[in-house]
Image (tube, rainbow, N blue to C red):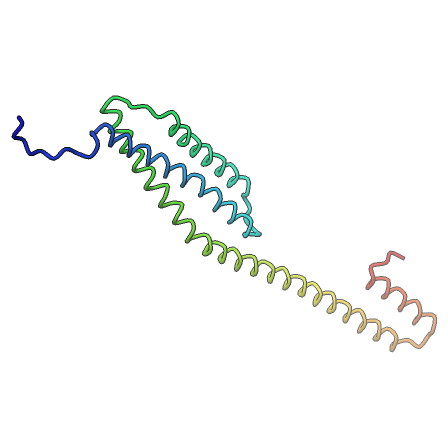
Length: 178
């Protein structure tokens, strides 16, 4: 057996699995802590996000998940070989997906904010147009009342009638009861 020229790995396989799990837990925790920060940034910059409380719950959930991985770093022990392989595969995949999600959010949030910004701009513009339409309607009603009042004044030259008609029409226009 001494003639075997086998290349020994730098670490035994069990130790290599432990290192992969340890490194994976670190990157999972890092991603889990960065995602809520990105969500907080999004909520702060987005003036019209309607479900802020959902993002707060989601952020708390993610932070707690990250905390479990940090705790696992402190309390890490080796399991049976089968469990170690399964856990290593799961943690490496989780680390990859978590980090990809965190990086994706960095690129997506500016686009989401610009969409929200345009939406807010359009909502404000629509509200402004509604106000202007209300003013136009009020002006049209006032114009009709003035024309009717002018017609009444022209049809009669009696000062008492002119005064009464003027007062009644002004009261209607101004929304006065008496």
